[in-house]
Image (cartoon, rainbow, N blue to C red; front, top):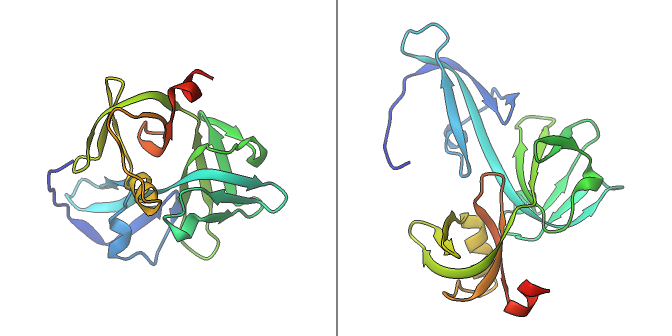
Length: 199
């Protein structure tokens, strides 16, 4: 939210970054672009001893190669996930909260990807297939909110960057398919015609 808070951290704080211990953390690790920080005070002395940092990368699937264990991103705004290379036994995939296989991932799925830091990164992929079809009624760029058919949705900056990179704008009263991430935010916006919506 918009409030500023302060917290006292132990000099030897343990950092769990995307589910795995990470000892070589820096200040930037405490500024997740798309995620959260949860702090734990083990002994109630007012100083936090453990930080759980969640920082998710957003990927909209262009293609999946199961033999090579690779997922290609359609957005192409974050080079670190333009191609996700998975390693055997070093990843998990969840669809609707259920464990899944790489072969279950489909084109246009929205992935929220947690990549741990360290020598052998562990990757956890959360897939969403939720879409909204409707007419864009308003767009508030400063708040990153779009109203589609009467309902308000947050849009991720990566989705806006992908549109602007293709010299596209969000047009009011145009029809669209919005692809949502696991938190119900727009990760990818497709402009479509009414005939497409009805097909």
